[in-house]
Image 1 (cartoon, rainbow, N blue to C red):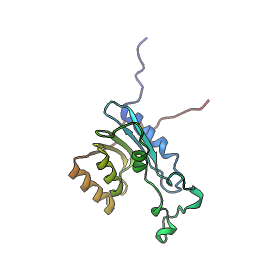
Image 2 (image 1 turned 120 degrees about the vertical axis):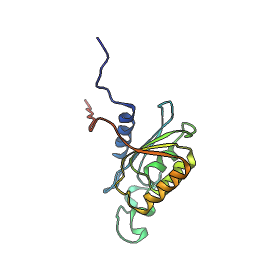
Image 3 (image 1 turned 30 degrees about the vertical axis):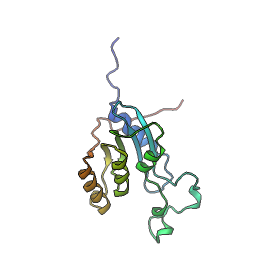
Image 4 (image 1 turned 135 degrees about the vertical axis):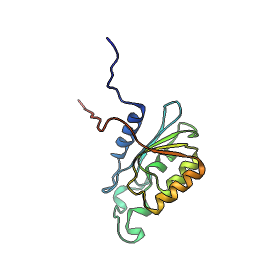
Amino acid sequence: MSKREDYISWDEYFMGIALMSAKRSKDPSTQVGCCLVNPDKRIMSMGYNGMPAGCDDDDYPWEREGGMLDTKYAFVCHAELNAILNNRAGSLEGCTAYVTLFPCNECAKAIIQSGIKKIIYLSDKYADAESTRASKKMLDSAGVIYEPYSGKVDKIELEFK
């Protein structure tokens, strides 16, 4: 008997974990996940967009429109920052971030400062936004590589039996 040929690639595996992490988000409009992987293909941390630990999701707004304190934007911690802050496995120097949405400028700062050297992203739907343009400018200056996800599978099914 020979080995299976239909197994998923490392990129498919780690992006799948980022997508699963996004499913933990309580945000009704945008769910984002991140998986941080070291050069030895070991997962260092994961994160999703949500309220900071200790802040009850029911006590804060999830609105996208309105004054700053009436929207989620003043309170939500993005997936990339959550993954960086949740890391307990060691240095993130040289790691790759698998993200379901291209990082904003604030997350780009944290990515650069933590030593992450590569970003593989699933969506860049805000490519024309100033925050994304600022992000790319900083990432380029710092030598952080970013590239779109190029896995061969469109769907991975999980069964809980």
